[in-house]
Every structure is written in C-alpha cells, then in structure tokens.
Length: 145
Image 1 (tube, rainbow, N blue to C red):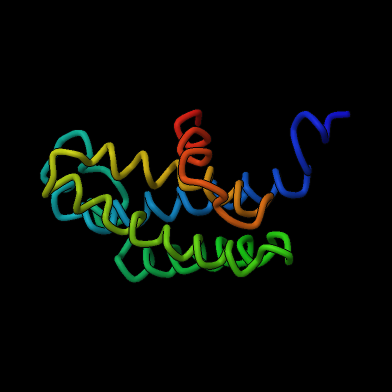
Image 2 (cartoon, rainbow, N blue to C red):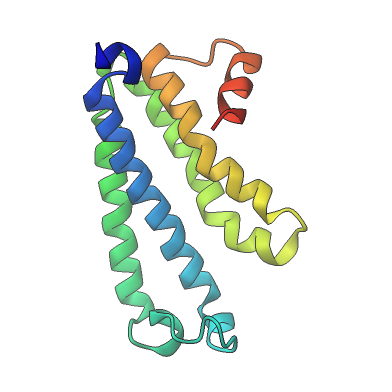
C-alpha cells in the first residue's frame, strides 16, 4: 500500500506544513537581520524590509504567526512521542536564528543552513520511533536528505 511506501499521510502532511512554516520563519528572521545590509546591495535593495514597504514590527508579527503555526504542528505530532518531539523541535530554533550570523561571522554558513534544513530528518525519526536509537543510524538518515 502507499502507506507502507510513503508512511503515514497525516504525519507527512504535518511535516510538509511544519517545513513550510519553519523555513519561512528562517527567511523572515534572515530578512530582519539583513535589512540594513540588503538596502545597500543592488540585488536585495527591493526586499520589503530593506526598502521600507514593511516595518520590523510587521515582520515580527508575521514571524510570530509562523512560529505559532510551527508550534501547533509540533504539538500535533504523535502523542506517544510528543515530549521528545517538543524537545528536539525547540532545539532547532537556535539554528534558525543564528544562520544570519553564520553568514557574517563564519566561513561555514552553508553548514549551519544544512543542519537547520535537515533537522526535519531527526524530527521525522523521533516522531516515528520516539528517540534517537543511535547516532550512526540518524547520521545516515540525515545525510540521505
């Protein structure tokens, strides 16, 4: 059956929605942090925050809505594994927030971005199995995404 191949459709829908919301939150945070720089760069000077079409207050409201949506998705994950899912979900927030800093202060922003985006592999494993069984099995899972 398709469930055997693709997994639980409800769980897939939750992860697709959560991914959309949290990647959007990451983009919002990035644009908020980068607005002063974006207004001085030709390629980015027309972004809504950089050109003044949106205020930081409006961006913060939008970010809050995205994060609340992400939290509601997180709280909708399987109840049997909810505690672990919440802990691992909360652990991803610093990665989302520090990516703009990683671009400025390290030579490895793509590493931070990759960890942030691939955090969903850990979350999927935990939502399905309840915990990280072994680092090697999840490292293999993460590297395959």
